[in-house]
Amino acid sequence: MPMDLDRVDQIVAEHGGEASALIQVLLDIQAENHWLPKEALERVAEKLGVSLARIRHIASFYTAFSLVPKGRHEIHLCVGTACHVRGAARVLDTLAEATGIQPGETDLELKYSLETVNCLGCCALGPVMQVDGKIHGRLSSGDAEDVLEKYT
Image 1 (cartoon, rainbow, N blue to C red):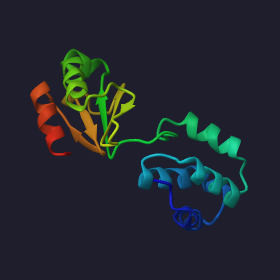
Image 2 (image 1 turned 45 degrees about the vertical axis):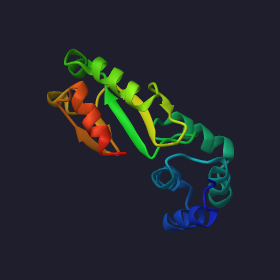
Image 3 (image 1 turned 30 degrees about the vertical axis):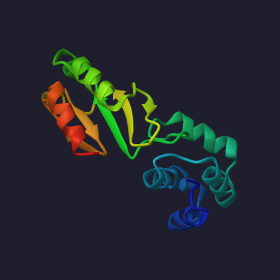
């Protein structure tokens, strides 16, 4: 589904139409759409007077941005040292089996996107996963499945 270009215009206007607000504009579009569609980037380039190449460079540099569609529920599993030694690999296997996707993928129904990260900043709670910004800690494989049930 294409991004509503009137909404892109509104987001740009909310930030004063200033090129210095580019990253915040992209973050707002990403928050609403779960990714940055090409037509939205073209409109931002036009409205802010910034080249499309520059916008694409920024959008591909920062991991907060995605240039491909993401699922409605974004799962981030920590595989950093503290989580790894507490069983993050087993949790990852469970998540991959339950969702049918591997890290870096999105399912065909655009329900889930699965990513691994090196740290979510709450090492004492490992293994930890974040779903749609909500932290779930001290996970076993069974706990991970239970958490996913809440997002069906």
